[in-house]
Amino acid sequence: MKTADRVNGESPPRGWMYLDGWAGRASYLVEVVGETPKRWRIKALTKVRLPGRERFLLPGETALVPRYAVRFTEQPLGESRNDSARSC
Image 1 (spheres, rainbow, N blue to C red):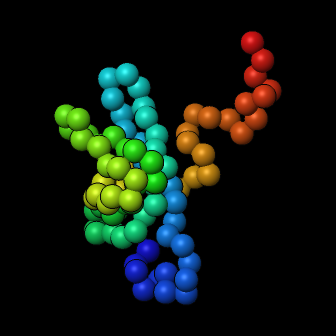
Image 2: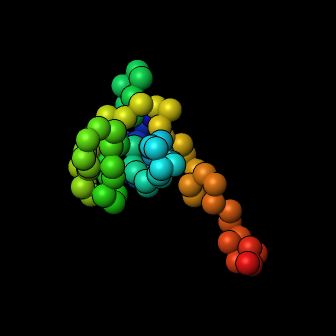
């Protein structure tokens, strides 16, 4: 996904960034705007927590994250498409 690949006016790909913590896994919707050999440059679409002590990205800010932290899916992992089918 080089910058030259998106010259035709395509929007940057969106994906989910995952952050594992002691309380479980958190997922954040992000836009991938660049790459390096080992990392994606992401743009936050919402307030995103990053590893470290009280480190956040506000909407519109960018950061480098490891490639394994971003997945290109329509919805976060662990959530089913038909939530109404689960009735408790």
